[in-house]
Structures are given as structure tokens and as C-alpha cells.
Length: 238
Length: 185
Image 1 (cartoon, chains in turn purple, cyan):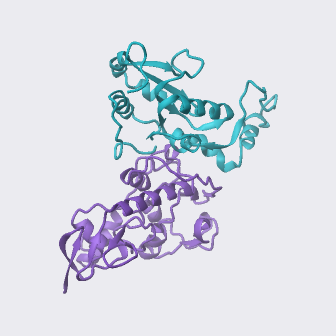
Image 2 (spheres, helix red, strand yellow):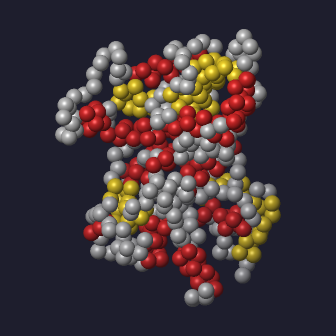
């Protein structure tokens, strides 16, 4: 295996050829906020929070989909990056209806945590207050589109781990929505196995178990750790 | 420090716009610390004291609640004009929060109709008392979208410790640094 050497915020580091810049950051304790990334699922670079500067490149790159290359010089934190991260979180908060006080994920929400971490104490943009649908047709789970940030973790876990691919994204831009099957009510989905993995990986309160009070949504993600370990150590190596 | 009373105490105000008063309850949760603060400030306007008009020359105003009515617009503007430091206290003032849930319904009327013209109501009528009852805004606003705000203290409600820290900093003439210590919700 080839080892690559590069610098991370000025510090020399080495990387295996299959490692991303985000892997390196996690390995070296460099804090980098993420929302769409989840260990055990594929990386898609959707949320843009892990954007980093690569010396010599005019464009910012998401660390989660950026392969470590020989000689790279990576900056994970600068005034520009901090400004953009703050701005991204503010836009996420302004886009739909994130009302923490009455949300099932209050206190356990990754969007709420990231907002505090990047220093968002208010949103400078007008809130859009869109009319969004709430799908409570499933016997066990609920989808509140008002709290969705389109991270696509649900889409990926359903496709990559459960193998059902019930979820996908329809529409474009601010009108984009996660949909089950061909945009039919979740409760009528033929492909959904009611496994609940989408609910467990959702970073916000968009997907939750029925009858949970505000702040009551606990996420259980052990199945992903199990899968990751099984992949790394050979099948079923628990 | 600018606005002092004759006795040398800071002139502090608290304001209740469109909120549930939970932020004021959190302020009361300072408990014994209120007694320590009392000799150092004059509470010149607040739902907790009997001042009818927002006074001139206020050092710091803690504002709870979103801007929901024409009366809130008027009061918020007066608060801004007469206070050196305006603090948005709690999620309704900072984000609109629960008070702004009705924005998605497209205006105040659908909410009024639901509350007052409900078929179960024996005498269905919309409340109207011009000059007495302020008109509701069609779009609820966070405070900073109406007037400039100097400091944001999110939380539903903000923790008493955070309010205490802000008051201590303000009384000492320091700029409060809250990053990482507060969150929405």
C-alpha cells in the first residue's frame, strides 16, 4: 500500500491511499462540522459544511469526498471557511421550519449542535416559513418535511444497508423533497420494510418514531458500527 | 457604563413581546442571585414592575418574545431608541420560534378564525376593539428583523445561568461572549 504525505493545517500527516481528508481530520482530532456524513454510509458532499481549502485550487472542496493526495496542503479553518459554515447553517435554518422548542429531536439534533458549534446565535436571512407536508401514514414512523435538511442519509441507508431503496429525492432546489417510492404516502409503500434505519440515521427530527414527545427522539445507530466493523474485519467479525 | 440612576445603579429593563413569559420565568430562576444583583441595578421597566411607559435612558433591555402585533412594533422601536444595549432574550425574540409558527398559514386571520370562529364556539366573533386591541401582524418577526439587536441569547427558555452571565458582564461593562454556551431550543 502506498502512503501519501500531505499537510493538514500546516502539520505533516500521512494517509493511506483510500483515506479522505475527513478521515484524516477525524484521525488527528481536527474538528470539522458535518451533517450529511455518517460513518458506515457512502459520502456525498451534500451539506458542504466540511469544505476545506486546498492550496493551488481556486475552489473549496468537501473533505468527505476529497481523497488525500501526495503533497496536498489543506486548510480546515480560516475566516472564509468559518464565515461560509455559519452562512450554510443559517440558510438551512431559514429554509424550512426548525422550531427546536417543539421538536422531537430537541437536545439530540445534529443541526442544533452544529449551529451552536459554528457560532450561529441568530439567522440573518428572512425565514421562509414554507408550507410543508407531514406524512404520518406509516404505522410506526413519521416524516416531517419541515425539519428535513436534504442530507440524504435516509436515502443512502435504505439503499446501501437495507437494500430497499424506498427513499429518494424529488424536485429541485428549495422545492426538493425526500419521497418514498414514487412520491406515494409512506404507509402505502410496497418497498419499505419498516426497519426504521432511516429514522435512526436522520440528523434532525424530520424522521421520528410515532408518539414521541418533544425532545424524546433517541437515535440508535449501533447497526452501522456493526456493519462498518464487519466490512473492515471480515464478515460478521463481531 | 452609560445609563445610571442617581444612586449609581444601572438602569435595566425587561420587555415581554409575543412569548409565553417562560424567559421571564427563567430570569426569576436566578433565585438568590437576584438578591445579589438587586443593589446593583434599577429595574425601570418590566412585566414584573409597575411602570406603564418605557422610560428614557436605559442601559440594557432584555426583550422576550417575537414581534407579533402593531403594539409590539411600536414598543420594540421605542425600546431600541431608548436603550444602549438591546438583548434578544430567548428563541421567540431570536428566531420567531413558536410565535412564528403561524407564518406558514399565510397570515393572522386563519389563526383568529380557528380560535374564535370555531364551530364549537357558542358566540363566534372575531375580537375587535380599535385603539384598544392591537392588530396582529400577518408575519411574525424575530426582533432583529425589525430593529438592530446587540446581543442574542437563544434558548427556550435561555438557562438562568446564561442570563446571569449576561447581566454580570453587562453590569461590569464587558461584552458577553456566549459562543458554545448557548443553543436554540
